[in-house]
Length: 580
Ligand SMILES: Cc1ncc(COP(=O)(O)O)c(C=O)c1O
Image (cartoon, rainbow, N blue to C red; front, side):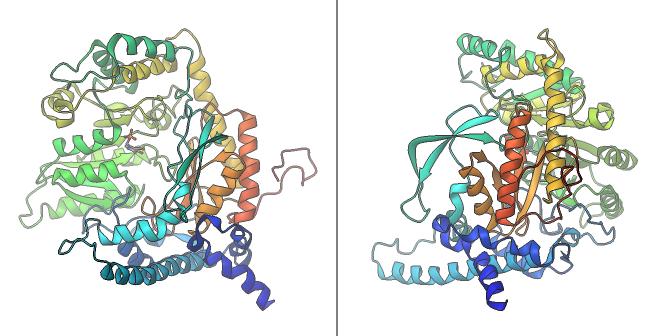
């Protein structure tokens, strides 16, 4: 028994040390849930996690916005409870004991082996004469270590090139490596894969009978670029039409558009907030918000992810304290949240958050990158879905890179606010305006959503994405996967935890022509690696069933069904769906 157990446990620690040629490891992984399937490990004192996180800290998607903020938060799991007194978000985490142990151990080993190899590397570098003498290393030490010793081993799972539109199925370019995954070379070969990774929520990213001809016409009329900023020659009739269209769609008096979603957050926040202002940010806000907030010079405080009671606690405390040192009242306070959290698939608790902001006279900034177009009866995002009046949200931000199959971002708000931004925002004054065909794509897709194309395709797409998302999520949960997020959200992370399971899951799925996105540190907290599935209205029921069959099989192989599976109806005596 003992040798048998060792045989199964031992390899599960090592796979990511060995890179892509290590094929047998997935078979060892089911052990983790096998031991203590329901025992969960509450990280009340996650010192090892924190020290590793600090060691590896390269700046993450989520916050940790300033030195005073609590450590990087983790996505709360289904059964997690949120202590209101303890702002340390890591206390929310509860993962299986053995999984936590093997995850720590795997990272520890990777770290130790990496250091060992670096020691010899330094020695040989020192012996070689072609070193730049007297210069500090140009790449930062810890980031460089993380990339060389951890990321490169599994880099084939990330940044996979594609050779077609990101539709329900797409062509993935095959690559190979001759140097243990350090460099990847493209081949001429492509494999047709089911796409579970793109943000193409409504299917507009592929050729569309209404949008595509109009986009092609706009390309001929206006060219791909205006070659100018908005205030010089970069405002076309399309840009003005787009701003009116977006304002009308999101339900605000006015809007301003930018060529990039990331820049929309990172350039607008420094315009609106500054010295003497307070930003209160959800602990899992996107990196564009974190960087925008940091760039503003405002003081940043973080509240526990999606916990309104903790937001209220932070607000009360900060209003009572006032500005640092002088204790003067804050010039203004802004609370920043997202509609759907892209790494968690959770809907924002917007009604409660709005009520608190109103009570304490704080402005609300809502980033709807993943929710606009994707949720709500007519695709108008979380406000429509959760019954919030858009007049109660002061600043509505969103991107066109998801549901609309285009690029760029918008800010929508009062006429005065938008006019002020047009006079002051550097991304409007100094950056080339959004590409005209991209603008036309957004206008056309919004028209389809509103039924202004003369069809009901928009309504059908919205019904389809909702049905697809809820079907897929509930089937994954029935199989025993740990799936984060809420119903109606097309984003559904499947928890992997152990670093060995990241390449195992990704490669095994790809072998069966299912392309998934895996996400790990620094985009998530160290322990909480996951696969993030994005569902599209373009997926048919057959596509989803194929995906479920493959994920179920690979899930068994890799050992990520952390919950007991629900008995299928078949097992209960009825005729029903079965995936394995
Ligand atoms: C919440 C959020 N805001 C902003 C962005 C940046 O948008 P874009 O990718 O369009 O630049 C993203 C990107 O995914 C996001 O998830």
